[in-house]
Length: 228
Image (cartoon, rainbow, N blue to C red; front, side):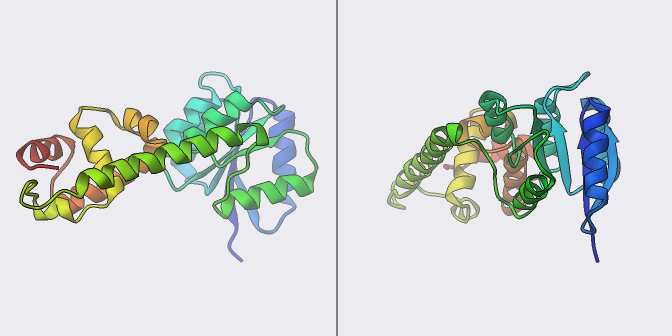
């Protein structure tokens, strides 16, 4: 039976050892490492490539939010579950914006820990009801951007000649390219489009392949030579 690999990051030994003990009693999980600060967490993630990171928000050297951003940028496939002592909606919202799959309040019963982990691994997001309006607004904003981009793309071919490679791109890919052409960084694009930096990076990799270009600079040059 394959096991889900997990890394636990918390600066309190009692918390990380307790979680490790709980998960160690479950057949489906394997704790590959425990860490006490953000820098060590990133190093251990690079070493072990776990499927899930349970990440404390407040840690020395590098806090959990920044560690989450860096991990998701480098390994977008890794799930991150934020550990918090209480429902701090500001921190949870920022964590979700940067790719976390939700949060877990420390000290909850084992059944809740396991069910939350499973939701995260299944691709779901756990969040306080208090931030639901922000999530809805972010979704609507993203949809509005896609609709606007679609309207801009629905121009007669005679008035807007387009390279065949560009015509094969999706609306989202076109939107990312418009931001890229403006000189925005991956992080700025992600913030504007309510995506994670890792997701933008994945989109760009796919775009480079479709356009047959080697990287960012060549893509920008290509966009200036061809109408988008």
